[in-house]
Every structure is written in C-alpha cells, then in structure tokens.
Image (cartoon, rainbow, N blue to C red; front, side, top):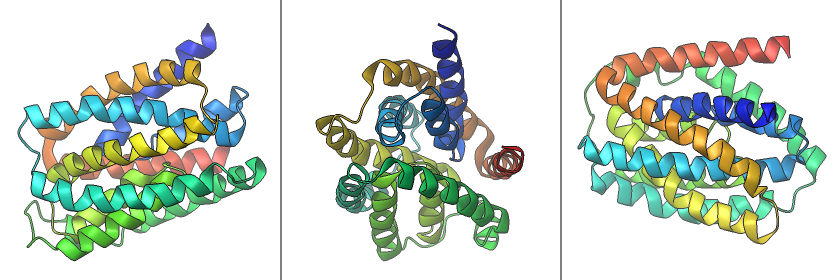
Length: 245
C-alpha cells in the first residue's frame, strides 16, 4: 500500500513538471525500476501515466484557449512517425543496456539544460516568425526519442518549439497534444509486446493527471518568464539528484 501511495505522489510531481517544463519521467522510471519492474517494462508502464496526463492537460489548454491547431498539425504527424521507430527499438533492447542509456540521458539532458543554448531565444516573451521546417524536423526527432525513452522529452520539445518561433506557453500546449498523439502509438506497441504493468501504470496515471492540472494552471497563470524559472529550478534539482545518487 505504501508503494502505491509513493507512486501516486511521485506521479503528481512528475505530471506537474512534465506540463510546465519536462523531466518528470526521470523520477517515475527509476522509481518503477526500484519497485521491481524490469527496465523496459518500467519504460512501457510509465507511458500509461504520460497518456492520461496529456489527455487531461490537452483539454485544459484548449479550455484556456491557448492551443493553435496550425502548430499542432505540423508537430504531431512527424512526431507520430518518429515514435513508431523509437518504440520498435525500445521494446527489443536489453534491460541492462536500457538502464545504462537512461543514466547517460539523465546526465546529458541535465547538462544541456544547464548550458541553456537557447537562452537568447527564450529571453523575449514574444513569438518569432513561424518556422514550419524547424517544427517538422524537430518533432520527428522528438518522436524518435520519445518513442524510445520519453524521459526528458519535454525539454527537447520546448527546444523544438522555441526554434520554430513559439513562446513557451503556446509551446507547452503543442507539447502536450503532440506527446498525447504519439504516446497512443507508443503505448500500444509496448502493450502488444507485453511490456506494461497496468496496475502500477494506473496508479501512476492517477497522480500524473492531478499533477497535469496543476501544471496547466501554473503555465497559463504565470506565463513565459515564470515557466523559464521553473525549468531552471527543475534542472538544478535533477543535477543534485544525480550527484547524490
């Protein structure tokens, strides 16, 4: 019973982080592995929470009228195609190899966000001219990565939307809708291969759905600059977690 409560609480925090910035799966996947799931099964189970979190977040962003469907269309289609490739690789990879890749990705993504190569582009709270090519290519790569591991994909999505000219509020709306679309495909592939623990996945999903609503509220209420600060704090916490673990 205690492990279910812990999974719910961590899911709540992860759901909020995933909507506001990203990196929530760096908390949930290791926790699922600690609970005894094989790493690849933990990777698949985590997607139950991701799917439910993005369903509720998508409805909330639409209710707040910050969704621009032009951007969603150009992001979602390439992301789904990429996720098909990434997920097919993920379900066949060795557990030990996946665990090592996850550890490396945690370090790489943390260093990337600490370095903050997009700092200048994020400094203004205005939209740049829409770059369709950047959005399409960016989300194809996002789909491959997200289909494979998901953890940290939020940071990559916000990098892609920023390069395409979107601010962080609209970028977050595109993020949750595109991740929702490709997670449907990805989760189906993991489930077909028997790589999902539905019991733990649904407990996690309950937490992520609650957390996603908090995240949407904070995103719309606080806006671009506040999100930027949360991204920075999230990265620092991850870095400290890596150092002491």
